[in-house]
Structures are given as C-alpha cells and as structure tokens.
Length: 222
Image 1 (cartoon, rainbow, N blue to C red):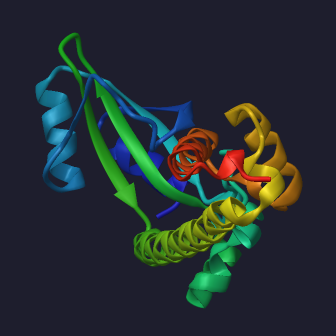
Image 2 (cartoon, rainbow, N blue to C red; image 1 turned 180 degrees about the vertical axis):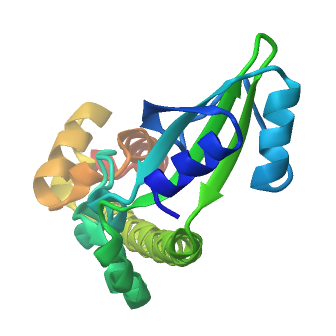
C-alpha cells in the first residue's frame, strides 16, 4: 500500500485524511492501539464522532544499518568504530533498496480521552525488523565477549604487575625507603605499566609489603 491508496481508502470511509509530520514510531502517551482490521478501525472512528484521521509515516533510513557506539572512556579496539549490521547479518543488505521508502503508516483519531491509533506495516519492514533484531543480539553477544576478554586480560596484567611489586621485597634499595609514599614512587619508576592498576589496590599492596618489611626487619640491614 502507498500513501495515495491509503488516503483514498480513508475518503471512501467518509473520513478526512490529514498528513502530519513526525515519526509513526514515536511514543504516544495518549495513544491506544486499535485491535482489528482497517475497516473495523474506520467504524470505531466514526462511532467516536471523529471525522478526520491524522496520518504519520516512518521511512527506512540509512543510519539504521549502522551502530555507532557511545564513548564511555573504555578502549575496546574495533568496537570503538562504527559497526555495519550488514557485516553481521548479510541478509540485511537486500533491504537497502528500501531506504527512503515508507515502512510504517500510523493512523490516529484524536478524542478528548485518547488517540485511537492504527498501524500499517509493510511486509518487508516486518522481515527487516526480525533480521535487525537478530543482528543486534549477535552484536551485543560479540561485544560482551570482547569486554570479557578485555577484562580478563587486564586482570592478568594487574596480577603480573602486583607480583612484580611483591618481588621488590628482594630489592635492598626498596626495603630501606622510609615511607610508603617513597615506596610507591619507587615502584612506579621501576615497574612499567604499574600506573594502570587500581591505585587504591596498589596502596593496599604496598601497605602489606611495608608491614612485611618491618616484621622481618629488612629495612635495618646494611
């Protein structure tokens, strides 16, 4: 169905079609979705003593084929780039020929109590939505795997760095340092990448190391 055909149907039902802007997919807080056929919807509208039906549409847009991650301060490599959903679900490519076409029509009869809405979706749009939902799910699973791998790699890196901090107990210069602050600065200078670990956890690690040094009397050795 196209827009001229739809407006003709509305006029044949003795109602007046009024095309309006906005998206047919926008949320309508006052809206109730009619359950039934288009002819039954026309009967309901007339029963409400409404003579005009507002028509809004939603076209398929190019941007819907792409995912642009919001910057959250995390570096997840390729996940920082735009993702073409067609690369995840190749079947979506066939729908690019519909870019600019009307996918959904929304008919709305407005009363004081509510907006009685009726939606007409093109068959290709319903197939597109199903495939897009699958593509989004696949992408989110992939993103979760990338995040889990990134977290695991960071945790391993942190463990290796903390192990390097523990080994400083064998460093004669380190054990003679008078304060934990001096130990922190010494460790940061000697261990590359140590600045990337959680600083509260690092300070706690140095406190424990400082206590071990005092307990063993290592700082008094010459």
